[in-house]
Image (cartoon, rainbow, N blue to C red; front, side, top):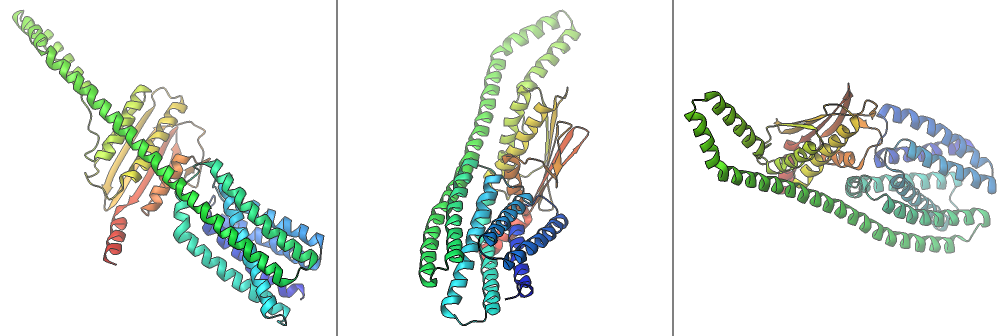
Length: 436
């Protein structure tokens, strides 16, 4: 088969790679820049792939290895996921690609040995592309929400999963090399491929069970965080109650002191004493930040942390008592938002650091804006801090879950994070699911 006939097949292959990468990974660049980089990658792929078809043996395998490495580098370049997670996803995808490609070629060779070579070539490519896109759709619907919710939690676990994926990919690659170099009989090779694929599916069942455990572990961490906030609020209430008991106990002494000032006709001293007493009572009172108990609990906890660090903490909230947001999601969003703001204030070195939190429910949307002092050199990429932390990954996951968005801005040493949740859309989806 001549090279010109193979170019469209190579183009369909690399186009499939780009589509899978775009929908599988968390984007680092805008859509326009991604298209630009994809075009450059596709040109290099077509050049190397076409070159590989002109030679045979070891040099062809070397070019194949270069193509795989280039695909992995492109995989890493356009994604902002952590390296072990990118490695796991890449090896899983390319392992599946190799299985499907080898299996289809062997089936066509066994069932249709007299099939014209160009026809077999394009039938295998078209079927492989269709199967991969179908698997991508299933991944987006079932596996992606679980994997995305983990963010960068447990990098050590991601490396272990990547190692498992690497082992199976190397098995697939070894079968391909053996077939190219030694021209193995198709039937034994097909049976070996089926056995390896079956074992791979079984192991991946364990892998995704482990991923599910990682998700539950992350949710348990949020529950522990919830307990911490609740404990902080209870501690504040107990301190306030103890202070009020002391005030009530000392009331007789306060009244005697006021009476003495009254006998001496010292009105100014009476006013000064009452003002001092009122200030002390106000400072001891527990502040109510929101009628929503979860929001109030989180704000109370971080108010205490901010006070200990000498950070001014202000909250303006008009959220209702009941919100169409799960408590675990609200804790993940608000808790991480305020935790990052607290760390930003501590690292800023500002003389008067502060955190301003604004929460507003408007037209079925929950708007949360958190302003805090930060370092002057804080850099952003696509509206998110460069080197995105686990906390920001958690916030972003919650926003996406409620069809919202997250956007950061930095100006004059002030970092402003704006999170939007579309609660109306969430309620509509739940109603439709209930009706159906």
